[in-house]
Structure formats: structure tokens, C-alpha cells
Length: 285
Image 1 (cartoon, rainbow, N blue to C red):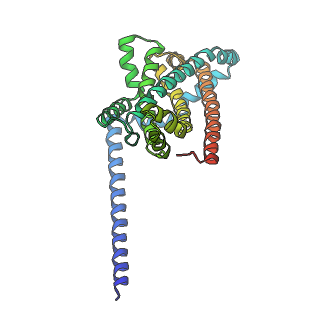
Image 2: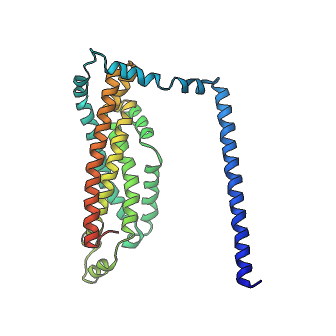
Image 3: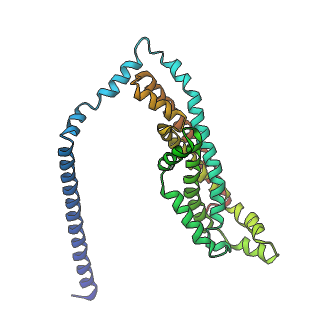
């Protein structure tokens, strides 16, 4: 047997071992999941299986209330539009302010643009901290301090957006072409001028694309934050569910669903145009 044949045989044996180990690990995971489900079912007195048999009862009640002759569904749908606009405004303000802070954090946390080195780990840890806590946790704390209003939701969105976008923007900065920076430095341009004319033109389209994507996420987050008293459509939805108002619940769900679809489509179109322009100009990083 030649050396190549021996190596191929050994490689085949190692591949078989990996497959066997993979199957055994998968079986072990499925077994643990099954045992965990059995334990949870016993602790809940069998309510999961019983609840699954009644899974469609609640949606059926909502649909029944929606199509009732006295439901007045369209009037309720129109009455909740201001709450939806408030939710969109919360997301827009949070995304705008958080995006501005994210740009600042991105520029002081990127290694290849001549930032003062001790500042980089400080900025990165601050972004990690802001990104670590979900908006809901931050909003709950702020509601306890500031009271129930859209302000806690906006602040929570700003903090989380700053951490999330700052990380993405920093990674975009690390992939820039350093040629323009070196050319500007050779002409005597200071650091701010190098960032303004050497970095921003390369990354601005990527920044906008990521910001639009984050805006979509923040609209969903704003709706969720309403459940804890932060205003917007989430607060109206909590009231409707609490009072078992089926027509109101369906109107709110449809309004939220349509709004998210429209904004997602608009954002997707804008992002595709931005990416298409970058591909044509060669600026995509």
C-alpha cells in the first residue's frame, strides 16, 4: 500500500468516526430534550398536551368577534392608526439618535484609522454593555425610574441601537481602503479631515443600509415595549388582550402586520438600490 492510499484510508476512518460521534451526540441531545419535556410536563400537571388540544380556541374566538355584525372592525382599525404612528416615531427617533452615537463609537473603536489605542477597548466594552441587555430589560428599569411614557422606550432603543450598530459600523471601518487616508495624511490633513474625506465616503452607503435594517428591527421592538407601558400600539394591544376584545385584537394585529410589511419592503428596496450603486461604483466593503 502506497503512502497516498494509506493516508486516504486513514482519512476515511477518521471521517467515519466523526459521523458516528455526530450521530451519538445528536441522539444524546434528543434524549435530553425528551426527558426535559417529560419533567416539565409532570411539573405542569400535563397542561401542555391539554393546552395543545385547545390551541385554536382563542384565535377562533378572536375571529368570531371580528366578523360579528356589531364589531365595527374598520372603525377600530382606523382608531389605532395614531398609536401605530407613535410606535413608528419611537423607532425612528431611537434609530436616528442611536445611529449618530453608533457612528461616533465606531470611529473611536476601529484599529486601522489611527485612533488613540487606549480608547479602543474602552469604546468596545461600552458597546458590548449596551448590546448585552435587551431593550425590554432596559425599558423596564427606565419605566421604574421615569414612569410610563414613550421616553423609556426611546432611550432603551437608543442604547441598544448604539451598541448593535456601533459594532457593525466598526467592522465596516476595518475593511476600508487605506490609500485615501495615507494620501490625505501626506498632504497634512488632520485626523478629522482624514475621517471626513477618506473614510466616510467609503462607508456611508453601508452605514445607511445597516441603519435601515436596524429601523425595521426597532419597529418590532417598539411594539413589544408597549406591553410594559411604554406607549404606542403595544399598550393598546395589551389593553385589548386584557379585556378580551377580539375585534380590537385582530385590528391591532392586522395594522401592525401591514405596517411592518410596508416598512420592510421599502427598506429592502432602498438597501438593494444602495448595494446596487456600490457594486457599480466599486465602493461596497
